[in-house]
Amino acid sequence: MDQKSPDPRPRSFLFGAGSSSELLRLGSILRKETVGGALLVVAAIIALVWANSPLSAGYFQLRDIRVGYEPWHLELSLGEWASDGLLAVFFFLVGLELKREFLIGDLREPGKSVVPVAAAAGGVAVPAIIYSVVNVASPETLRGWAIPTATDIAFAVAVLALIGSHLPGALRIFLLTLAVVDDLIAIGIIAVFYSHDIRPEPLLVVLLALSSYTLLAHRYRRFFGTRGAAWLILLPLGAAAWVLVHNSGIHATVAGVMLGFAVPLAHSKSGRDPGGGLAEILEHGLRPVSAGIAVPVFAFFAAGVQVGGRDGIGSLFANPVTVGIIIALVVGKPVGILGTVWLLTKATRARLDRSIKWIDIFGVSLLGGIGFTVSLLVAELSFGHGNNYGDQATTGILAASLIASLLAAAVLLPRNRHYRQASLPRPASAAGSGSGESSQSAA
Image (cartoon, rainbow, N blue to C red; front, top):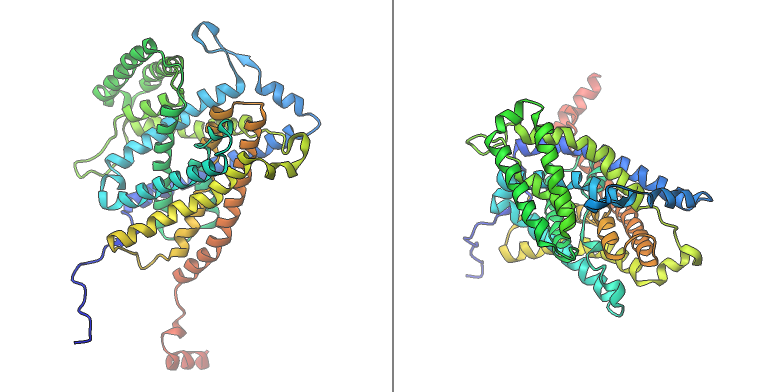
């Protein structure tokens, strides 16, 4: 009578192993993003050193050089070309990845998508709230509330690849999917809150250009998928759509996402992506451009700030912009991500997969605090270049990304050693004490 009857309701498991095709695709992305993340860090370090050297004037003069065709509103500084133009390539690949995840990836299954989607939402909401609380007394700095909401996919994946080579595949899939959904939310924030002076005429022409691009890409997918015509026809049409979006008042990187969504995916009747087709051709051609040129060049022009300014580095911790960003990214991101996953386990009575511990999820959630590329872009949209608030925001992003990387390494490196040791084959002597002793004596 005192014994409790077992709960008849079955428990589901979070962070189960992904499909083999998903793990193979993840491995390929990890290898590519590791190189891109390393180049991004190198470019940012060069910019920081140059901007704080006796030759700093040359850096800022280079960043502010203006080139382009003014009648089309394209006379931009090199820094603006990097953020508005080159990052459109990065966001084009984000659009492709989002479409793949929602149509043929794990996000198409509600049971697998609910955890990373909810965790990404929590990882956006909590940092935004923390930054807003820290800056509530200053309307001028409060407009940077969205800066700490983004996770840098290239930087975070690069750190994970360096420190977590033996972590379970489910954790890697979780981080990648989390970052992809995070990017989607960031794109929505940029489109809604950082578009200004919307002009309807260019928007109408954008719809025509985008419709033509989509129609051609889908109707003649075999033609574009087997020849170089994609670069001769679709690339100029996509560039025209980018110019029109830029002139409409919507931030031009949104054009990259829309164009990425418009590309058809090659997939079999079973729903799995067999590879090939226009999407793969464009991705293989543009990913090296994004990882090797677009993102590092943007980081070079965005990360060059004079640390501490005239008042010295100690002044960084006296202003609400820098402090708010650091706390939001380093504390808010893991609290939002880990807390959301924990709440899901309580609400759904699900349990973690037996191969994963809570400390693993905590380590991965710390990587979410690496807000680099998109955070720097939002900081520029919030405060602009070459002013006190913009420099404070950039310094906060760089400091928070470094702190988050070090904390994640401190947590995940021991876990990586644990999983590496667990994967090693056990010696024959461990099979039984009697047989082990006899084998040693015989030896």
